[in-house]
Length: 47
Image (cartoon, rainbow, N blue to C red; front, top):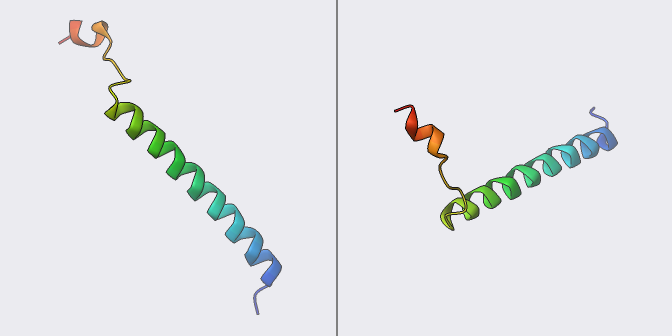
């Protein structure tokens, strides 16, 4: 049998990582949608 307290700890770690990834993705998409990211002129100078 699996150790239930160990599984709870692993589940908590996975849930925390999932929450952090979701919040980061939401912040990036929201900032990008609000045109918070502006392309740098140097990126277009090399084209």
